[in-house]
Amino acid sequence: MSDHKSRLLIAASGTGGHLFPALAVAQKLSDYEIQWLGVPNRLETSLVPDFYPLHTVNIDGFQTRLGVKTIFLFAKMLGAIAFTYKLIKREKIDLVFTTGGYISAPAILGAKLAKVPVILHESNYIPGKVTKLLGKQCNLVALGFEGTKKYLPKTKTQWVSTPVRQEFLSPNPLDFKIPPNVPVIVAMGGSQGAVALNRLVRQCAPRWLKNGWYIVHLTGNRDDDFGTFEHPNYIEMTFYDNMAGLLNRADFAISRSGASALTELAITKTPSVLIPFPFAAEDHQFFNAQVFTEANAGIVFRQDDLTPEILDKTVTNLIKDKIKLREMAGNCQKLALFDSADILARIIRSLG
Image 1 (spheres, one colour):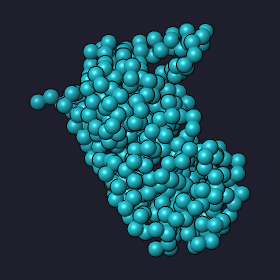
Image 2 (image 1 turned 180 degrees about the horizontal axis):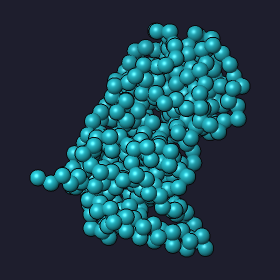
Image 3 (image 1 turned 180 degrees about the vertical axis):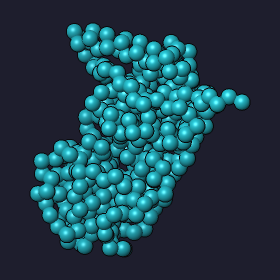
Image 4 (image 1 turned 135 degrees about the vertical axis):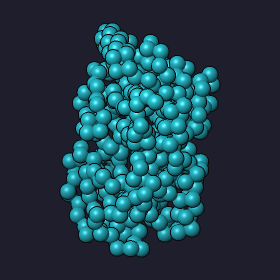
């Protein structure tokens, strides 16, 4: 009987939205030898090397406008494809799994050249450029949102939801104290923070705190106003590692609408006000949020349309309406699959 372990190359880079689902799947594949493909100076360089060998390739996303820069980007892409192909051959990779973004282009094309299967996970409701262009080259495009299949009519797809880290399925308690039975609002702007969202929350905070509620505000590390507002019930952090425990305790969230954040809200049954990042590619965060609005699991506002008065009134009315909150919480859990990482791990095993 052979002791050979199947070898998997995971290509995931950039933000937590790409990396955390990939890490969640990797956790399920302890019987595989896993290597990672990323980009220098991105989040993966701090998250991945403690667990998996990390190979980096210098590549940038393509811009809409054609010009001289496009020639250099195209040359970089060709170099990245060649690098990935050689890596797959040298390391005897059996299968490639990627979670989208521009790193997935050389991953998919390198895999096709090397004649190994490739699976792409598309977490956003509106598929990205690479998914639209290269999805047909994949053995399967796994979808974070069920409705996304209508945008990929000639591509083999399967709805699997978006994987969350194992800790979301069995959350640890918080390592700071909040009294029981007190409403808790969590404000979060994603892995990179959101200054506009932070400003709105601080403007509303005095009125919410007057009600005896708690606010846990995750600001990101790019907010110059960090530390300018203080209150015993206002807990401000740039980042918090135990998001599973925090959202499990929260009554309500104010959040951007990246696919991973939405899945975490769904798994923890946390109703939300969603403020899509207005400059997201193809406005994909707005379309992600629309799914939650249509399911009555969240309320979406365009950032430019949202005033402190509107946010204050919306959050206050919802937190005081326990029946409405329970209804929204119940609707949340219908939008995500708890075993998404297991489903993807089974698909990977079936192909490689």
